[in-house]
Length: 221
Image 1 (cartoon, rainbow, N blue to C red):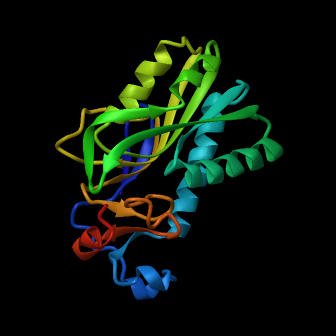
Image 2: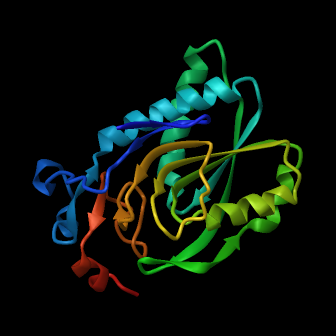
Image 3: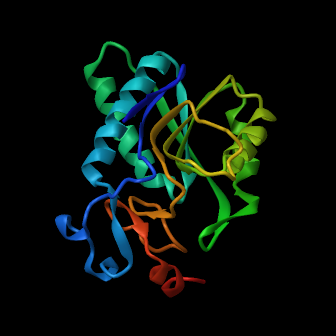
């Protein structure tokens, strides 16, 4: 189902979503025993990413934007989103001049989000003073990681900040934060694939899938 808000629209994956059997898709053989099912196929990810790019160009076209990638998980979404924005720049009347920057936030240990957030590269945020910033994230879970980054950014006095996240998780641990643009709202499952990792594994999986309990033990640090 398609959900709406005054700021954005997104696809909602319901709690009773059954997903798809693994053997309907191309899944790396080394992960076949680690996954329950496919929840968001790669093609659907790409279609939503293309639409998010269109919405961003519609809203921010004409502004010089610094696209800030949140590493490591956000790199694949970041790359595909920027490719779609570049295609729109070449074929639409309204375009978005783009430069890029990177930051890494560490907030996960095994399958639980930790209470503390470690920022790597935060001392370089001062270069964003007076600029229009588009933060590109792979997933917002509790929202505290993004709130930490936004707090750090506010100290640098950017002109404007917008956030786009491919996924937003429904969780009772959430702070209520919602990004300006979001691709999918997902249940409180631990998801891997399309650069979402579990202790650095599964970044090479094209679809977004549910990790099974056996794999959590297998790849535990």
